[in-house]
Length: 239
Image (cartoon, rainbow, N blue to C red):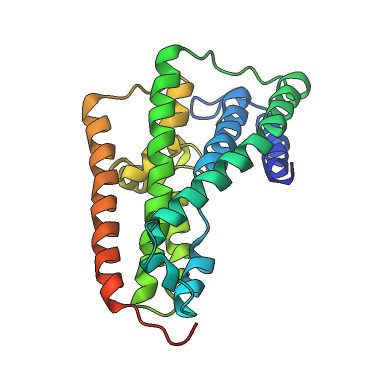
């Protein structure tokens, strides 16, 4: 429930912004509240923050058993990450329902109508957002075989996704130079585009589907190559 509190606070903030105006750059208060609600939904299912612990395990030489078992270190991280996210989201569902009810009853938020087409597009991008977050975090972890404090790169990952993913404010509120930068990166498909789809502002094109899919496969290839090199580089004493 604590993770939903910042979103609830943002409702009060934007309610004050819209007190004297009905729209700001095409956004009403309902659309802004909905934006942050769906941001919470997406981040609950996709955000990854396991870099520090895993890099520390590498640094301490605690991953020896993953080199002799059928389940490799990257696969262990994936299944552990997937289980944690699903469990966390199950815990978040009641909170999200309460938040949506409060938004509608006490703030007058009218959520955009949802169609099968919107759900399919949103689900596809939610899956790719999950994959991108995991793969970027995994790449940082695997760099720990070469750099002692590779987990520090987590902050750069967070800044890139936050700024270029459109998770702080809608893309229309950004300065022109930042809008251009966002439109050229795949990170926009993690937050900005999925929310625009739900709100009826965007519809996925085949070229976009291919683009974000290719980016995911590129990250998979990078992670696989790093793991292959890491297996030969890794050494530990004792244990």
